[in-house]
Length: 428
Image (tube, rainbow, N blue to C red; front, side, top):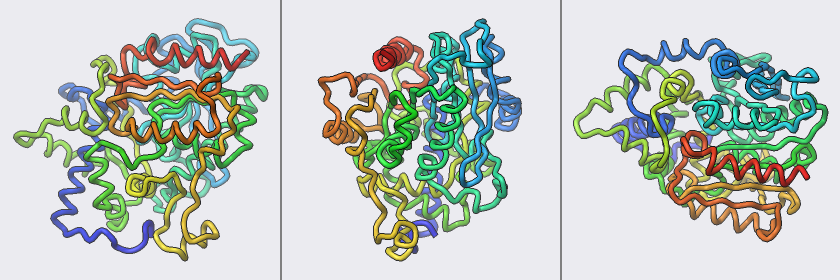
């Protein structure tokens, strides 16, 4: 059982209160400070809208070529991967990217690849990169709506959900990077991650040196690494009361914020007098400066996505412990069985080679990627990367919070243009 025995000591009432709080918070974070759903829109009809696949629902209607791919991990998960090989209206040459530099986009927690396609083609990074001559690949982690297949398990099996971000880094990212490298004619790729997508990259770069040979650089937006200074009161409270562990003990191996029970609970809570769900969203993610209403229906059709409860436990361990380490099984015996030692091994970000190019962009209002935690990460990276050279570029946006980096109406100018300039520098 994840995390060992019952260490949280929750009474039934306090557990229910904590459960209600975190479920509301998760729904709020996923909504990323967007307004309430348009009347008549339900979760079920929204899911139907997303049923045709990302290429058909979000890419082709805007005039872009798009390919659907699948990748199978070494532990049997079948992942969905989309490719945008050319810009809008452009004829793709050479059977796809036509020798273009590939870019791999990796979403964050409880999101999927639509993260990069939420806004208009002029505002979303996936389209912008394609229009600027890149061969764009969009990853979808295990457990998300288009990556729920497995060679021997079904998603209703508890064994299907026996993973955390350790496996997202060592299994999913590894398989996807190798696949893109092969499909792109063994061209090295740029990587862009948001939120949890940055953590799995940092872990891979420090722990799987073979990945570096297939990458040109990594862009880390709203980076997640050290979490003990996380300023989101709701996320911290959930970790402090061992909420994810409690959910696991209740038999919930899949954490699905769109489930019928969750949807009903959130709806009831938001109807209570004095409850302002919009402000609660900001309290969880930080006060996003620059979101608008244009993509609300896209969001409602696709997000939030399910993840493993074990993954939530792992993140809670990081909040409580202040380290970047592998999953803690809660006792020395189980840890020895998995790792050959009594405590989980740490990921050493100082082991990332100093000549590997990194671009980090973080915000002053981000409650999940807190400024203090990012500063600690930068100090660690500074042991191998000099800020004076071109291998570590750091951008600080005082008014940005967590969702702004992928959904802000002005992210093209403020984040994506500097990111692409960084890419060009590494392509010389």
